[in-house]
Length: 411
Image (cartoon, rainbow, N blue to C red):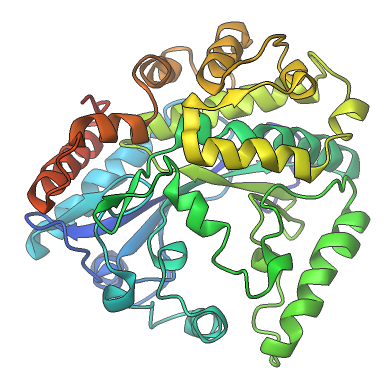
């Protein structure tokens, strides 16, 4: 985002997908070939009008993203869906397709990980040398990233305060990863459970996932970024990783483009559901910033430890989490102890719709999620007690169909 936009004047959205064999669903490390097909050479990014394609750290994951900020989320899901179909068309010659959800159900990162080998390879090699990227937390996690702009320090503080309060309940509506290594993990958001631990060698990089109580650029740099840079220095003599994106909290400040990037949203079964969540979160953040229920001063008063307690619960139990913190419930105008699903129902019923951000119709997938459960819950319902390899393949093939048809996944 080059132009300095104010709050909710632009939206940057990134969607990550796995490339898999159509029949076996085994991951296919061919994203470099897919991008070469349209770009004519091995490059990291390909721009196609409003949507761009880019690589990730591993060769079986491709990212679709807005090509710069979009001034609205209206019709954005359809634009992303067109590119999903375009990529799947290219993948036909490889007998492959895109697979949604935040993690592959039986991928073995120890034997199947293949890093991107072209542009920006020194960055990926540095990560691999320091952390060993053969792990689910590196090579098997697909997410929706949401970039929201701020025009100045005042807007940064308000946006950061609101996002910190939103993060704990994101898994309660967005979890899509109940299974790794062909087995239930005990977490409905397994992606976030491995994500929060994948850089434990240098704890300051991820912190508690919930960012600290910092609400100015100066404090952010002093309290968060400088500590990360200091801690990585002994492992990164050439300063290859000394950039803002090294920060791996659940939301990171990108002062290089004046945005905050939210990273804790599991990818869903289709672009319609992904963009509905982006819209819902944006509307809720707007209300928090407008101090609908509590003031900015009170919003700043939440320590990351108390927010992390709720977050760790929703990673495990998603919509089934019991939330009994009166202080936290008051943030959203709720009063009594309730499940996280009930809290989201309360939020959705009382949200003020803003058609300049997203249309009412485009929020319809939220009703499916609130009524039938998170995608993680729906996947578990479909799998039941049958975790045979063949049954997992059949259920996840249905997810591939949901992606290409842009229809919601139903057990």
